[in-house]
Length: 407
Image 1: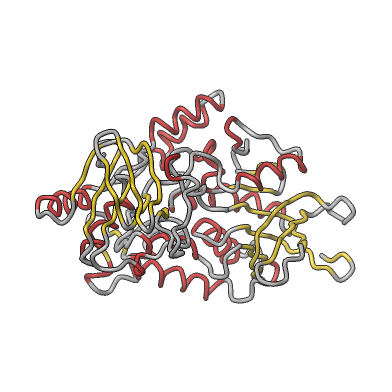
Image 2: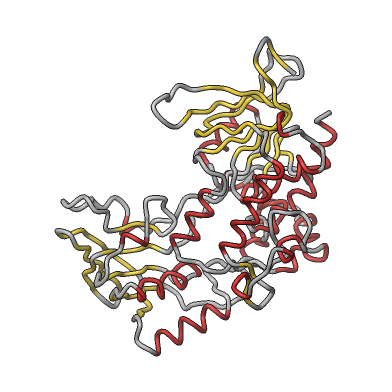
């Protein structure tokens, strides 16, 4: 397991969000890998960092996913933690954010205590042809003052980079920071955004009409802000953001039967519901509108500019000047970790499908020993690939394959 004094880990997991942690803890729990032979890599210092920041940023109180979808592979596990009425909400016993956070911390404590965790950005992965067994070589640029590249070796790697970057509409790209140094335009999913820095009395424009926007609006109103929502399209209402049929064998078989990448992409787009909101959140939104807590317009933003410490925004049917603009416009329509994916494809001769997505096998192996999950598994898992249940579906494919590789 070593080359000289350098350790070769049995498994490296790139990304410690929901998908990465679900797969890592499951691999340890099932005995496929010991914590001491597990390497966790993430550019942020805490596990679940981006998930935690994003639910905080949009002031989400309950998850959209049901209680059966957690970090534990056993569906009843999260429900067993529910003690108080505030731990869940109907329908589907959806867990509160604090409960899900405790659930994640418990899984990490039980299974990852002895794992090696390195903070930094993974920039490349290739094969080390000079070592016995040709392990993967993972290049990482650490965070902090020591920015020298380091490399780590592992017999198998799981890529779990999370979501694509936030989508910034064209009119808001490249806007200067005002002279007071306060960023007036930020995406709700950007790490720099913090809703608690917003002052009472600010005039705020929220752009978008999906689940993040509708969670954020009442929180801003509670802070005594003057809140306006501009959305491009009518709000669509669905309990879940993809067709649940694709979790089971009846519809997931459609992905297997699709003959081309183009057919699979069409299936994805037809059965995903981006920008939709669950019925209970929509009812609260309509009630708040009727009470005058905020206003809304349906229009297309055409131009934006910073004027002094304010932002002037023009749309197809309105013009407004605001203290702050918060973009709730989802994520970019591209593979997560696009640059890393491209680098791996070039160095490992790994096949890419249309749009730059990995062309993986049914076991989610992109090439032997290198596995993908989340959005990178879209063309195999189908519409639920990015969701918590998508991590479960990926686990069922990846862990049996890992068992054959890691001995």
